[in-house]
Image 1 (spheres, rainbow, N blue to C red):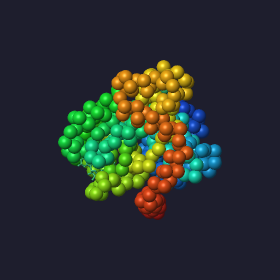
Image 2: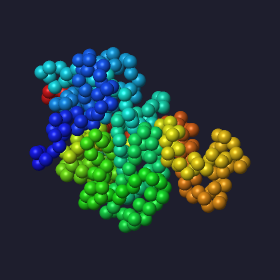
Image 3: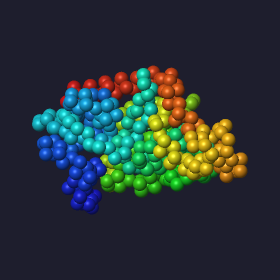
Image 4: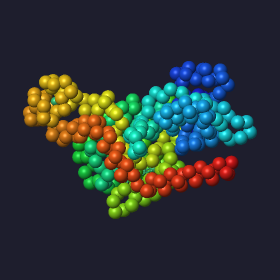
Length: 367
Ligand SMILES: Nc1nc2c(ncn2[C@@H]2O[C@H](COP(=O)(O)OP(=O)(O)OP(=O)(O)O)[C@@H](O)[C@H]2O)c(=O)[nH]1
Ligand SMILES: [Mg+2]
Ligand SMILES: [Zn+2]
């Protein structure tokens, strides 16, 4: 098998991780300063798992970088960083983060509105939704706004086809709502449709799986690898809610090329300021809105509103109009959303975080 791999695959482990000419250029000053490039696989508050050309290391950032960075500028899964490797130890220090090409962020609960970067430098984002009780078109649209806003290409995966007696109907419904965004029906259980997912992944491409907890992100990734690489747990039967099995982000290199990232379920994600994302998610509504009489029309009570006229004329579906208004509202009411998500924050998140931190501590002690 190995002999059949292209030479570049064997020669350049950095290329396997997604390294390219632009990054090499961005990295020049850091190379001159004696640092080596690495990609962040997982991160928590203080420790990072990173991949260099030949090793997986645990890294910490310098105090200087910590003080000079805002929280979103700190290294995130998928980031390229400049590191100093400590000889004879499996440890490194991160001195700088290279500019990001794309990023996937969500709004998180906190004292103030806070942007949390889920993944950096991704090309394709698989937005996964279950065809069981999890299915929710409005939520799907919110995820799409998030992806468009971050500059990546979304692909929708409707998973668990085995649990849905009318997959074709759902597929058509979603496709009608999302326009040109590709929509695939898949089954993590049987592997059906997973080959077509793989067609979006090849060397030089980084993909990430996002979606609520329990929709099957890790299962689909396992399928892609053809082996169990992630722990998966059964969904709680009563409410189709997941158990937040994945408590940290993972970055994995597919044997035939391409980088795959897993994320923990984004249960309480809210929209980040997503003006461009809104336009990309509702292009037809935005086009109609150009004809509204008032600039800054709210499309609800205003006179001579082209959007409402379009709904009345049957040119725009009532459902589309409603979800557009909802997102429109979400974007202007971030403050309220933050308060809500604070209330929604569950103790289980803290438990998961604690378990992960313990895991990291154990791991460091093993080293
Ligand atoms: N019936 C059915 N179950 C599936 C399918 N795909 C995944 N599951 C099950 O759904 C449950 C959750 O799957 P995971 O892959 O852990 O879900 P996840 O999205 O990674 O969840 P988090 O890591 O918590 O965000 C597991 O019990 C899987 O076996 C599918 O196509 N059909
Ligand atoms: Mg998972
Ligand atoms: Zn209007």
